[in-house]
Length: 429
Ligand code: ATP
Image 1 (cartoon, protein in one colour):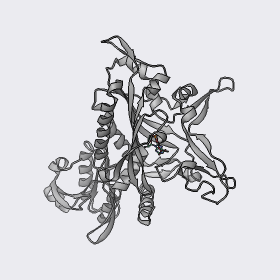
Image 2: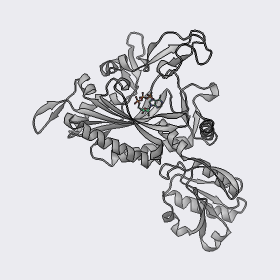
Image 3: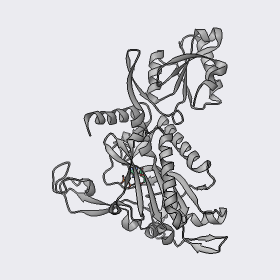
Image 4: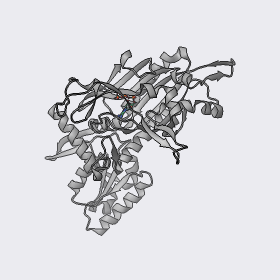
């Protein structure tokens, strides 16, 4: 990682903490590695991304069936899916300091990166988190926190067919938490032990898998565009056979140029009929009376990695009116705060009253609107720029005369006067 990129990473992590986007998990107790908590702005940003995703891939379509399946999943399912055996990473442990590393990410496989001690032999390490369910030792059942969402879709395949009788092709989608006991969590939200995924399994006839693979590949690019990632920073990687997951016959990774290097953002896999076959599931075509096993295309979107990429992409520094500033050029659709309303001076009750009125009237249509009368106006602009608020509206003495306000644009810093009656329609949100 070069110095400039290293700085970008530090600046983003620090902004996220300072402004209430993302905090280290369990920080007040020393922190728990591989966990992060979303603060008010981070939670809102994540929610907006989820909503956008849901609209694009679920609610605007007729072929997608949403579910929200259990996080605690019995051992039998992971046995059938092959995860007990194959959901592993190669691991080596330092004989001296006991630190563990992913063997496939080391260039020197003999000496510890931390203490230069001798590394032990390579072992396979299963990433699933085991949990015991049941209240007594006799009725305890071994289960695992889900390491992928997909099994939730597969084990509900028959339920969806029985309730909704979908015709092929159709998909089952969900957004939810996933848990992986990563050997070496690092790089902020990039490699963590608990993360949010948005994903669907799309069931097709075997002879149509290539057509649908290409279709979803294009749709993934459209999504990348929706969330404001530049196409120059996202790259497809055709994953070689030996590097693909155990269930995949073809995988394309969508990689992003993170500050620490080009790494996987999303994946698109052709899972064949591997999972449905292992769960002994099939599809009955009503028109022909034929039974067969559909094949599966799986686009998967890590939300933490999405948020991290969006933050890298939107972080900007420039100079406005002779002052340095930091601003997040977030797409308006996902910005956590859409508009901020200020009275020019906080000690002038008539300005505060009018600003409150404008705030209340806009809040009916723009729920994520903020009122701020703290500090001088320049500082308030800077604060909103730093969290990516697209518009700031200022109520001044002219407002009391002619019912117009100042609307300031985040990216250009330009200000224009707008009549309050036209305020809502003048904002593009
Ligand atoms: P990697 O090779 O980086 O470990 P993977 O190939 O195991 O990733 P998948 O199994 O394809 O990842 O997981 C689907 C998506 O989940 C990834 O595209 C990524 O967005 C996200 N993801 C996977 N592992 C993590 C993690 N440890 N932390 C955050 N997001 C993750």
